[in-house]
Structure formats: C-alpha cells, structure tokens
Amino acid sequence: MLKLSEGLTDAMLSMIKRELTASAVTKAGAMLAKPAFRNIKKRLDYSEHGGAPLLGVRKIVVIGHGSSNARAIRNAIRSVKEFSENRAGERIEKGIAETNARCSVNGKAC
Image 1 (cartoon, rainbow, N blue to C red):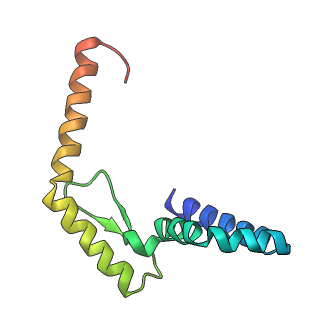
Image 2 (spheres, rainbow, N blue to C red):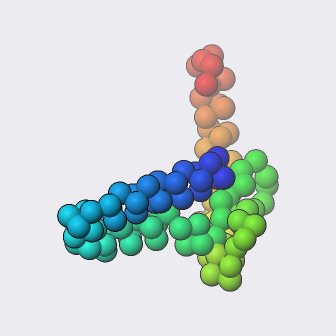
C-alpha cells in the first residue's frame, strides 16, 4: 500500500503540474494557489513522516523509504518516539482485544 500511494502521489502531482502550466490562464491560477499546493505537497511528502508503522509486531517498528534522506530518518525517529510516548502499541492491542471480545460475545463475524 505504501508503494502504491507513493506512486499515485507522484503521478497526480505530475499531472497537476502539467495541467497548471498548459496555458497563461492556468499558470496565473497556479500562482494564486501556490501556497495551497505547497501545503498539500508537504503533507504528502514521505520525508515529513519518515515512514509507516509496521503492524502485527509487539514493538514499535517504523519502515522507512529505501531512499530516505537525513530529514526522513529524523522524522521516523520522531514518529517512533511519539508512538512510544502515546503507548500506541498497547492501545492497538487493547482495541483488538476489545473487538475480539465483542465479536465472541455477540457471536457475530467481525
């Protein structure tokens, strides 16, 4: 999923850029919307997050991109720290256990 989303992001940004530079009118609109596009690009930038959490393991594991730069690695370490401080692993385990308990009591397939 991570690779798919990265590829889709790159493709969409490329298409948007191509369309926004197609004419004088779209170039003018792009200049007005530049701050919004910059914010969206920042939110989609993998190095802002550093990686994705790996679920299904008992400890906190964040998988980074193979071409991660120093900023991405720093943000991955920050993510691990935040996950740890917020006890994300314990909260996920608890949520799964509660869901399983509800399913077994109600006899429903979850």
